[in-house]
Length: 199
Image (spheres, helix red, strand yellow):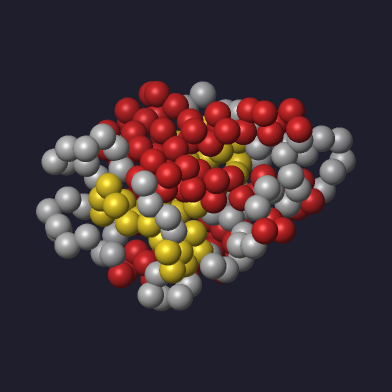
């Protein structure tokens, strides 16, 4: 990534590392950056910081002004995410407004999503850690809906559980749509993305 004429975006998939968490609702961010990596034709590799796996490349149809993107999966748990994000943002010289966090969102129904810039953390440990380390909440969020837990199920148990079998049939389409939203965001900006994807 030596060409410095186009700005770099840092796209952070929020999740917890390791196979025991892989299918959890809380790990939707990992699923989306995996899809983006596939579209870029690359695999995640360890970053030299040792704290994250990254894919570097361009996102979108080939062309001169295709955005340069670093996809990131931290190697730590969600509540410690901010440190590695800040480290990579500094390494790639990415300001907060070109950081995209992809995360699960309880307050949005499953199979819907919204994109926004800035905001609070709404009890989400990954967002809280990012805001704390970056010193601002003014980064983009791709908020992938998981809905509220049924009945009296504890929220923490719900987010750290697997999707239902009915949801698993729809999940690939949801991941695909979220990946499309990230592509649109880095290529065409927030307003266009919100018009197209905010359901």
